[in-house]
Image (cartoon, rainbow, N blue to C red; front, side, top):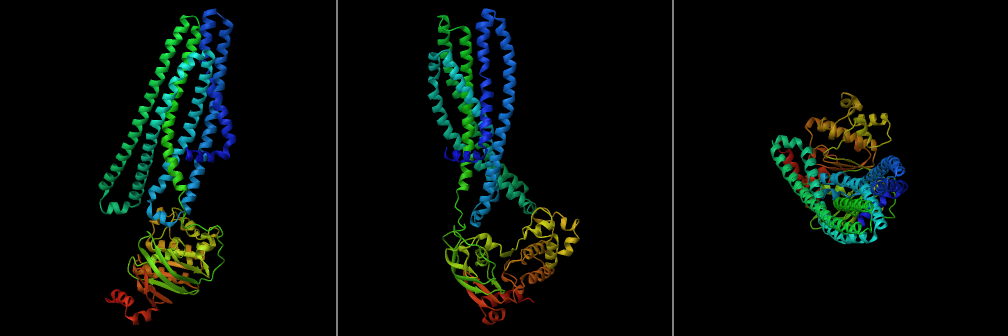
Length: 574
């Protein structure tokens, strides 16, 4: 129950409402306890003694009790639902913040669908645990306790005889509870698998259709869906066994009551009305026990989701700011990479003992075969990962000693695959500077050679571009990304193969925009097309995680090494 107690801490801001809700639950639940007493008075006083005054009192009281019950039932439902929904909102927000802070290494190892499942399926289980189960738990507890108290008042010996079965019920619930929680964990995992498959398949629908793999994807989904079905049915099997087990034990208790209570009525120790009322309370006792067993089963299943949520919240943020991290002041753009070694998996080094220095305003290029470590360097400068050895310094500041926010605010990145959001063109470019005016956005678009095509869109800058901007060409998306980077106005730029996916005509337009973007800024360019880096102040050739050559374009050609070989391969046909 450790994690459930942690979950209850999220209720703390709403304790006032919770207190009112519990009062309403107690009153609404307590109203249910009045009916058996009515039966007792009807038999012993109205029917046996022909007491018309009591009949009138009973008639009026039934209407009053149910009116009161209805009033408090409404407020218990509203207040508990309000609290439950607020807790769900708060937990979902805390989880979303957690994912925003998680290092890139986490997302490298976990599918997007799995992450989405935490925020949807698992958080939805909290709603069930806190709203439906909480109302039912308190209501049934009130009826259970109230029934026991009134049973003791009517006949304490018969009550003690009835309660013999309680330890057996508790033991049965404990045994089943463990198994239900285990199966609940499996259900949440299978739901996460389904969500992951859905996200992966739908986001890759163009590939699916181009390879005519619709039937294959359906088979994949059917397999995961069936695995989820089996997990759910295992849980149903356990919960279905728990309820009749508890009911059987309750039936044993009722049998004792019928025999012993009947004996006391025959002997004149108890009135017939009292026995009927006692039996009604005993049934009231059995029903809450049965319902509480169902609640317990659902709570165990919800606990599996709650455990998953707190597992994520407890994950270590490997790339976290130090407690004494400083704010990086506005930089000139001097970057020093000092003997860095980095590994993604802790076993194989992606970079090994790499060192270089870049002066403010210089354009630096990285070239080399795929997997050599070029993009790794680009990921380390904005501190998406932390190096295992060595240091990266900007204007003399070790990037691990400053806040990630102040570091990344001064770095602009234009990736190979442009990421755009399902909103307007204006808002996509404004993402680079959230408080930018419309005029500033348009100026950035003009500088990126994007203004013309934007104005030709159906609604110009207010055109919604759809998911990931797939309605635009690759060159158009890239120019929007450049405009976004220009609006941010960073001192350090990272261009990760920004033109490699474009045709020749689009490349010329985008390259012109990039040249404008790089003016006066320290720029790191990762390129496969060597034509885009001839003007670089320095070119580093990376191979197997090491710098094997360094120099200008002319110097490297004269060297006749790896760079010269790459150049000859690309331009031999020209």
